[in-house]
Image (cartoon, rainbow, N blue to C red; front, side, top):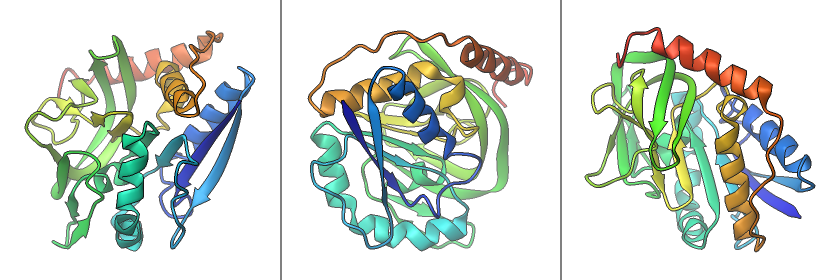
Length: 245
């Protein structure tokens, strides 16, 4: 089975090893007999209607976000339609911010978002950096990663976060929540990259992408000893911060 991935702006939004998430998805799909077909969707490219099972966008600095924001906003309608039709979407850090309605950078410039996630972001004067651990009650799992952002992301009332912060800053350093999820779209500040130390989340994305492709499958378990060890190390570093910062 072929899983079609649309990688948005890989030449611009690829900071902090976020490309590694694609590598993890590719290998975990291959081990189950599936092929990940990755297609770059860059500046001026159209979003192929109905031809992407999983979208992915990584993080970048303000300069890179400014370069892509208006082009991404022009893709808003087909991206929203794809998610509403069942496609999965993972957005990290800068990409996460642009999935909201807007992002105000440190200079006060407002960049448009695509309005897929119910949130907005405003840059703060202090960066929020360090290991972070989340409890994802909706999945009965935890997510571990590394955050490094100045943006304060504010979820709309009633919006569903990706997880509750056990340790770290999260969306804004105050709410106690991190990330956002809507349908099969997930936004998060967790870098590192995220998926090598959180194999359950990688498999969830693959299963949702397969479902969009018309192939319902519960993926067979893999021997994830190294992945679980990486998760445990990251989680322990986060907990050593002594609770939510």
